[in-house]
Image 1 (cartoon, rainbow, N blue to C red):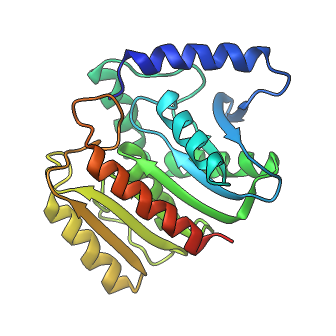
Image 2 (spheres, rainbow, N blue to C red):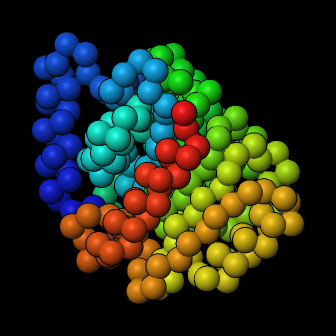
Length: 247
């Protein structure tokens, strides 16, 4: 859902990373396949924000969020769930890559766990961490929560909210924070309400906010879906939440 500007910026970032002595791009393997994440930290002791990308893969949008988090004093690791150099472009490709992981939740969990372990190997403070995700990544971060991952919170920005029939939040160990657009036609307000009921029933501490007029992907810069008011409000609350949660 990002425009060509991000593709061009991505090429530039890859070039800079290749020239730099210590590139923020890091490769790792999962079941013989190579993946490439992005890690940057302002200090060795900085708390960690673990980021899961949208359905077009890890690109300049997530890197921009990493930079924004670094400026706030947080380390950030953007995980790769599709594979090195795999950046879906067409609608068909995006649907295919995400559908494959939606159908294989065990693989999705393995890839998320591998990313977190990679972040730890780079010196990230995974014991003082929050996970966030955008759109597809929002659905993935909630999958991570249900898996029992040991993080302080799981945050979804305009993400998928439905819980698979054979899953629940009984293993969840962190706070759940959800930012959702009331005008989202991909993820309904009914799904939003259902998740709230599930979390309440399971005794999971949570906070869920909707923004009027905001469609799906309302935080994605330079697109027709971007809503500045909702983006800035959700980011401000998220920034406050990080201060409250990570120490």
